[in-house]
Image (cartoon, rainbow, N blue to C red):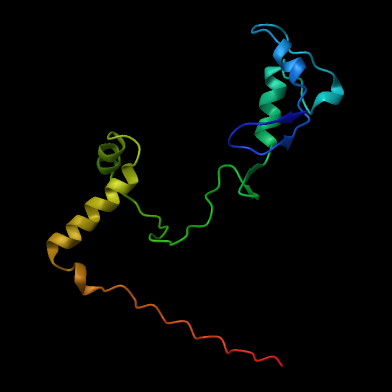
Length: 135
């Protein structure tokens, strides 16, 4: 069977559209073991299958629960101890509380006038690669 939408060229699909269109909301989904890796009528089996599945984005596997590499890392991971009052104050403001602590510290540095005392290190220019002449 072929799909033909304005945004797509003819794309071959293995989807059994007659079977899908015959499905009525609330009915049990017809399933045979050769149909797929889990029974779609078994919520726990579906949840377990999706929990262990790899997410693929732009052709690359994206691991769940792990942050990918940053294009331009701008912050450093540190561990520090803060008073319970400070943590509770910022956590009570909702998601993004760690960014707000960072902002408050940065604002404090700027107000003290010592912000420019520690300039960012200059980037070392990349050495151009030698050109190779072929004959």
